[in-house]
Image (cartoon, rainbow, N blue to C red; front, side, top):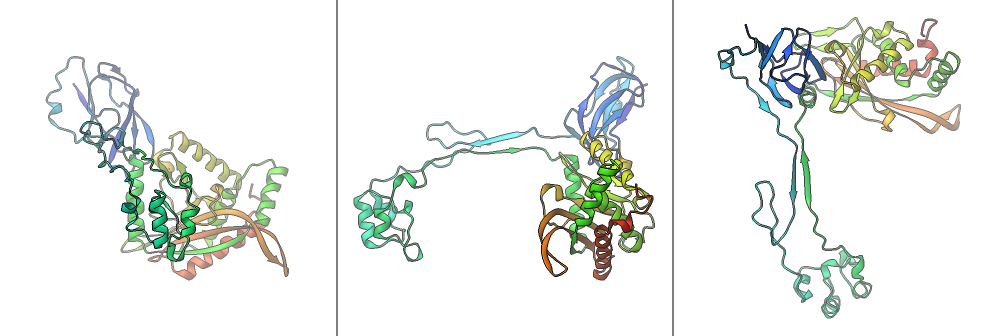
Amino acid sequence: MAEIVRMPKLSDTMTDGVVAKWHKKIGDTINEGDLLADIETDKATMEFESFVSGTLLYIGVQEQGTAPVDAILAILGKKGEDISKLMVEKPLIAIEKPIEKVEVAPTETSPTPLAKTQAPTPKPPVSNQPIAQNSKVFASPLAQKMAKERNIILSQVVGTGENGRITKSDIENYNSSTTVSNFVGVEKYTEVPVSQMRKIIAQRLGESKFSAPHFYLSIAIDMDNAIQTRKSIQDILDIKISFNDLIIKAVAIALKKHPKVNSSWLGEKIRYNEHINIGVAVAVEDGLLVPVVRFADGKTLSQISTEVMSFAQKAKDKKLQPEDWAGNTFTISNLGMFGIEEFTAIINPPDACILAVGSINAVPVVKNGQIVSGNIMKVTLSCDHRVVDGVTGAKFLQTVKSLIENPAIMLGTQFI
């Protein structure tokens, strides 16, 4: 008996799915566990395996087509089986429009333009009487007379007089070869469908920004000791760690000391999380994913480093699974590697805070009364004011600063 295969719900926030690629075609024999299609969710593109066996009789969503969760994705059954009764249910499928390229090319001889191409009204030829072009230009009478005699269009002359007034010397020094040409270009643009990931990013962060009252706290951190510590670990112990790994460890310890920051607004109540799961924002082609380092306070630097590198590779390969990005209690977004000195980030629900990390910059600093070269990193904490007050956020940042500036405090005998 034929069975319907429906659009699966592959993440807790998924409402629609896009069929990125079909691995089977109508008429193919499918065994349970065979790779049927690649489904693009709001988080990643995931492989979807068939849970039934049979012949592929019907495909309900074509490649690059969108359908809601539980819509008919395909129908499997015996070859030649009548599936008309199963197809009475009409899936709500919206096929994404292909990339459109639109050009607007002005021409006087072209025929009536197509629906998406419109030629602007042809401009009249430049008059041989410059005075007609000069009537609205601010110029001295002598300059106007000289322009008329020399067949110069005053609108192309840069005035050096008061309030941009064109003077005699401007006309005398005018060189037509240095003016803006009458070149007419072609207007172009490209439109691409919004991916499921980008739709959900827009929806969730829009809700966060406009529902949670954000406020921001920034602090500068002296990175000299952190730089030396990182170098020593890598040179002596041959363990590769990043500054981001040090920041994750410092934040995890600070959250243990300031549990009010490790919290969530739930409307009628506030949840103070005793476990510490830190989301680490990772950029991918279609947007941003936030895989979670679970129980980060109990992990060593090398464990954190290995886990974050694994997440980054899986995100690049679109292999992250729903369990990888669920359960965050705090988030870190680091743009320092792109040279961004300082920025503010939008809180990643359900967290109450997110830490934006900038680049490390060599700047003059005062130490022991002397101006010396130092390495400074600026971080900004975005807080949900419904949960975290200014003093609470400030104390948390002070702890993070103290830990990063004095790595020996947070890196005990078991830190590696």
